[in-house]
Amino acid sequence: MARFVCVNCGNCYPNEGLPHHCPSCGGFFTLTDLVYDPKAKRGLPGMWAYRELMGVSENPVCYLGEGQTALVERKTDTLSFYAKLESLNPSGSFKDRNSAIVSSFLRARGVRSVVEDSSGNAGASLALYTAAFGIDSKIFVPTGTTGPKVRQIIDSGAQVVPVAGPRENAHQAALAELLKGKDVYASHAMLPFGMAAYATIAWEIFEQLGQLPDRVFCPIGHGSLFFGLLQGFKAISQYLGLSKRPGMIGVQPERCSPLASAWRGQPFVKSGLPSLAEGTMVADPVRGKEILAELKPGWDNLVAVAESEIWLTYSDLARMGIYVEPTSAMVYTALKNCPAAEGINVLVFSGNGLKFDDNKK
Image (tube, rainbow, N blue to C red; front, side):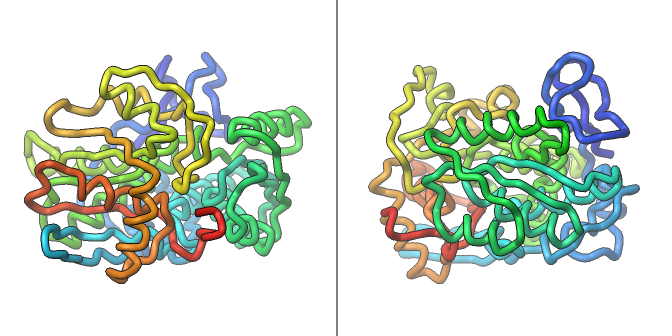
């Protein structure tokens, strides 16, 4: 079953506390030994049906409605795809799967107060879940963060701390808060647990379709969603005895595309410009090296999409009955630009359109 280990020294995640770095060597923790086995499912709601497979069988269930999101088929004159609507989770984003599993660790380990930094969705999700399970939270956000997301955080009772400057400044402010010694860092990017929760998206897609898709399109910020999905599909392929998993297509905005640049063998240069796809404006993805090490040339791909195309596909999707924020809409842009899109394509839509402030377009 799933384990969480240090990427450098291989040590297992500690049994106490909630460290975001390995106490032995300072490395990041990651997900390993993930197994898919439908016989291990239990009669629990949502993603918690996979509780044992996620490696959290001893943790309390923290369920607010996350998981088992809809898979909806859509067709145009030239394209067909399935939309995995992670935008329909309780706070309106895929981050709820991470917040649920992190909350289960917080409760199991008696943590009462956390800090987090976020461009919006992760903070809104964590604020909702920690409030629901009696944990205090303080969320550091860039000052330009979209209004609806900040309002979600405030309405959930969390303390919001706006931080001027680029996204990295909010991260550094959260780390500085930790030095006061009162909180733990419930980082959606640096803690490894969310990747096991995101693997359940792959398992749901497989079970909803009744087969593996040919391709999966997914946005990449820090990369936890993409890497968790990849590991989830890899586990299914191993269970079925297949040599191949679905092709994984990672999508970033041109204005911040470090992994797409690395994939093409090109240097990444920060544009300094904002993007409609604010949820993916991450210049140094935590899971970047792990993703690049897993991808197969000629089978997988990492692409960057133009800013002008993001707004167009956001509008196109709304007229198809899929109301998602621009960060999510990027995956449809990538599908339209895909030179060979035959077969079964699944697009993972990560955030609800109600979260988007259209004054920023």
